[in-house]
Image 1 (cartoon, rainbow, N blue to C red):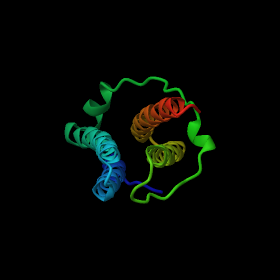
Image 2 (image 1 turned 30 degrees about the horizontal axis):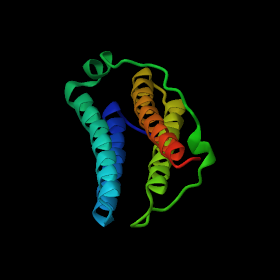
Image 3 (image 1 turned 135 degrees about the vertical axis):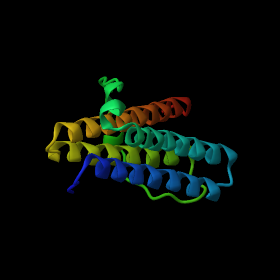
Image 4 (image 1 turned 135 degrees about the horizontal axis):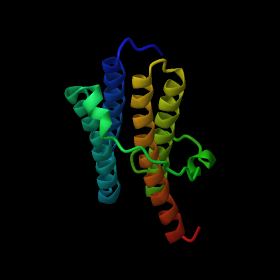
Length: 155
């Protein structure tokens, strides 16, 4: 994938975040169980936060937008390594919806890591590092929810 400018990278990332928002909102409308519906709406809100962060970065300008960003190591507990991809179907259980969300975050993280390794400029690398960190935080949060849920189920 080739980007002509930092704005192209940001626009691409905004599009990816919007796709995630749309997926979760669409799935939430198909759910009859209120708990699953609420969880999917919460996932869409998290993706909206990512999108807003990127939109702010574009408005503020690259230099101002990334200077305040705090990079930190996000632990990878690797739950997703042991999960198969699943296709969303209305009425899925909580566990399966979590797996779908985890795998979506894993795939986004892989994409941004790949783009990071291909980036030529330091500015592009910083943008992809930010995106990687945001996806890694979201993945860790979902994997933790999954672990908690499985513990409650006695697994």
